[in-house]
Amino acid sequence: MSAPASERLLLLDSASLYFRAFYGVPPRSTGPSGIPTNAVAGFLDMIATLVTRYRPTHLVACWDDDWRPQWRVDAIPTYKAHRVAEDAVDGEAVPDELGPQVPVIAAALEAIGIPRIGAADYEADDVIGTLAMRHRGQMPIDVVTGDRDLFQLVDDASGTRVLYTARGGVRQPDLVTQSFLAEKYGVPTGEAYLDMAALRGDTSDGLPGVKGIGDKTAATLIWDFGSLAGVRAAVAAGDPRIKGARRTNLEAASDYLDVAPLVVRVAHDVPVGDLDLHLPDDIADPGAMSRLALEHALTGPFDRMGTALRSL
Image 1 (cartoon, rainbow, N blue to C red):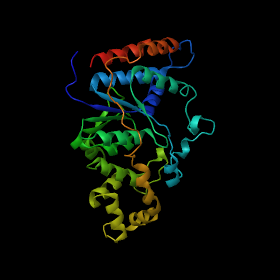
Image 2 (image 1 turned 90 degrees about the vertical axis):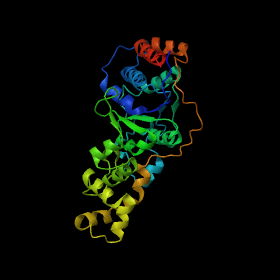
Image 3 (image 1 turned 135 degrees about the horizontal axis):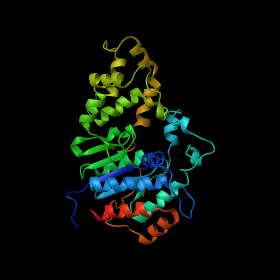
Image 4 (image 1 turned 180 degrees about the vertical axis):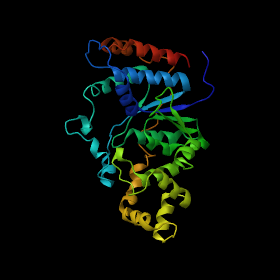
């Protein structure tokens, strides 16, 4: 068995992937449990594909222990407010057939031996940000997600990129590097993307942004003034390059811009402890795997996962 040429860390935005699996994989036969398993099967197949293609030595399934942290809501009350459902688990609107599959996914990860890491009061994005910063410079890092928010972590110097699955899935993701950010969004770095995102806002997350400022205008402002802080300083100083309605809208959004960076920036200091992130070279608990495979009719996905691990 050949060893990987070098170390590589894969950080999975788990909910992003299992939601994609749920909507992308057709309903399949259930096992004795009667629980639907299309999201479980699709999620496991995604990981097997990623392991086979990118050959990571370290892999983490990052978890939303709190999908809408109160500290973000306190800063911007509209944050993810449109996703709240009073009758759903933890207040989050989750399709009826997906909810029962999430514990099965967690059990499957444990059986395989893939660490699943979350933290109270933090989202998976924050866990990803913390682990990316902790291991930056030690090994290349790939963040696997369908969420543009994590573009802020892109850093060519340390080999940190995003495998963006929104269009092509895990088989044909967009490889988001600084050149991708420059070409697609007109910003030079992940940090500049963060500033642009705060200005632009994001309706899918309930972030209003600054009126009249979309991707193009936000990117131009960041280029011209270096950062969001530079834009705000220029407004405060009466810089003539910012005038008319644009100045009026930026001034009116002052309170929002005071807190937007806090909400948009992923945390870098989540208390996740020092954990072994090594990817096993075979299924860690074959007995647990067999029980899950039989109970939920998941033999095929588990077999593919085992084959992927043994190929490293």
